[in-house]
Image 1 (cartoon, rainbow, N blue to C red):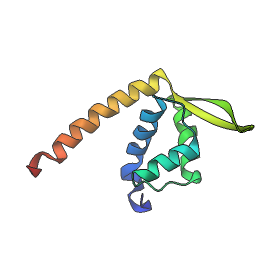
Image 2: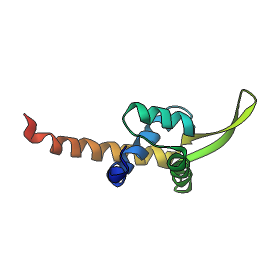
Image 3: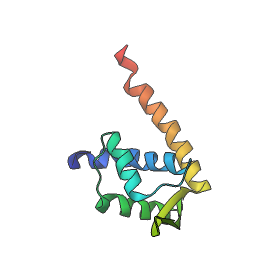
Image 4: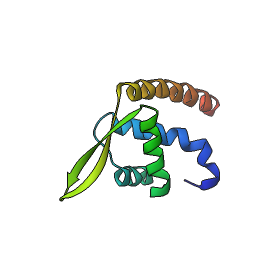
Length: 104
């Protein structure tokens, strides 16, 4: 993701995180890799504050996990996070319909 368009896409990144965190535990580097596959170029300096902020808002809940004997913080969507995801999905569908209306 190009820095000059970050503000435009930052909500989409959060929806992406909520989508994955509502299905399985996610972790920072794993989400960086997932988002990279979709063309978003985020680094740890962006991803970890984003995850912490989403947790402060009550959208995610974190816990400590062990992977190969090393601690890893994982995140799951809360009920509020799943509600936010559902609302976001509705808004994205509405926007997508509007943005693509004249492309027929």
